[in-house]
Structures are given as structure tokens and as C-alpha cells.
Image (cartoon, rainbow, N blue to C red; front, side, top):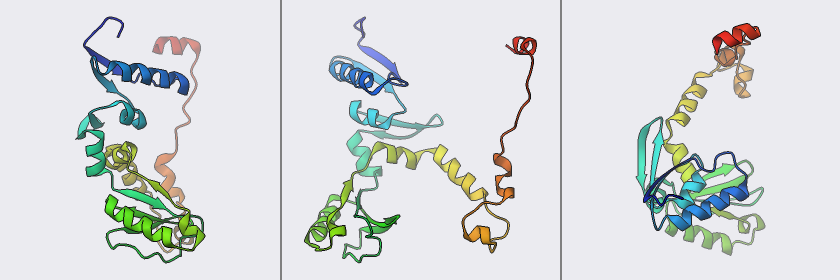
Length: 204
């Protein structure tokens, strides 16, 4: 930046620094991006959302998606999430068939594919006289959710979870969702063995 370069490569500039310094770096990049082309790599998805005009999502070196933040959210964001108040899990709420209902512990949650479905649901909740339905929060799609949906690393974790199955599905531990020792066998870390300073020097 100090040299006046027209193209700047910025590689994880805010990793390992405190939030105040991070914001200062954001301010610098925001001020400079109108004068230069900046190629930014980052693991912080909120940072990419704030600073980037165009986003490319990579997973294990493979291109997964690209576009503006608005485009990625519209195409891959999965819509809006509406989380209702406590103890709303079993309360009946009339809603559009396109709006999917699920739950988050003791709270009901609706996933709206678009703003039209969201507006209809919010209007229904506002007319309700039940306090738990009027205390809702709305979460829009984020780049982090998009990345987790596209990431091969997350897919690998899901495959591993499927492999950790109990040998007898009728077992009491299976019904309680507890893995057996056989399921844990591949996850045990090796204890390793110590070596002398001379051996360490030789290895180095």
C-alpha cells in the first residue's frame, strides 16, 4: 500500500489480532479499494462480506461458487430464518406451505425461501396474542452458512459421523445417542514417545 501499487494481494491480514486493530485494517482497505484492485484471502466470512465486491469460495483448492455477496445470498443462502420465543415449539402457527417449519430446542423456527414468505409469516405473528409468537428474531442468509453448505470439509465431517454407528441399533446406548467403544476406536490419539535433546536436534 505504501508503494502505491495498483494491484495489492492481501493474505489473511487480520488473523490473530485484536478486534480494534482488525477494524482499523478494515478501514484502511475500505478507503483504498476505490483506488486499487485488492485481492483478499480470509477465513473470516464476515470480513469477506464487509470488504468484498466479488467473492470466490474455495474448498480444498476447488472453486465452489463465485459472485457478488448479494448474488451468493440469493442463490445459495437458503432464505430467511425466523426464530420464535421460548416454549413455542408446540404452538400451532398458520403459515404458507412454502415456509418450512423446524425447531431449535424449545423454540419453533421457520425457514422462508424469499421475502414474500417472510412478510406473510411476520404479519401472522404480529397479529397473534400469544407472547411467545410475538417475540421473534429474523436472521438473513450469511456467507458463513453458504460456505458451510458448500465446504467439502463439512461433508467429510458428516461422512465420519455416519461411520460412527453402534453395532446393535436396538442397544440402549443407541437409543440414547451414545457411541460404543468400537465407534470411538479410530478417534483415539496416539500417546507418542519422548526423545532426548540430541535426537530432537538430529530430527531438526
